[in-house]
Length: 170
Image (cartoon, rainbow, N blue to C red):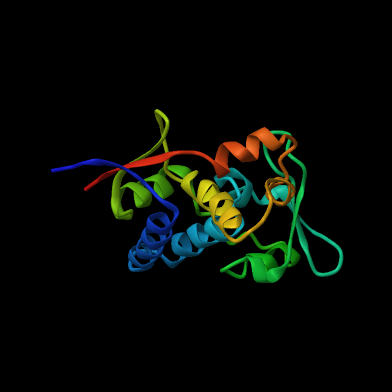
């Protein structure tokens, strides 16, 4: 029988590891994509849309973020995949990734049946919530997290940091 419970950071972290392992059995491309979402806190469209990316200076890559946020700059060690080097080579490794298949993998292989923030159903956006909460847990200030995410308003990032996430078990 399914039950609704609060979904804590430790549980989310463990479940994302299980999820990554399960997805890897089916597609290494999607496993890498999800791991990059987890490590960077990017939105799905920001990582998947290669036109948003350009080489930066001092061995970085820059993402033109969505929703009028500030651009974000990344080093190579912030990615699980070789996405960083592919930006420099102008070779889109995620061109075959699409939202409907990513959602299918999430629904099929994530340990929780349903995940919610308030009454909003979460799938790929869980990675963004997780990154913000994880950074707060590691001692970053709200302002440091806001700057990392490129958010213009502190209220936006606090919505991720302090969100109450609920799940329904399988």
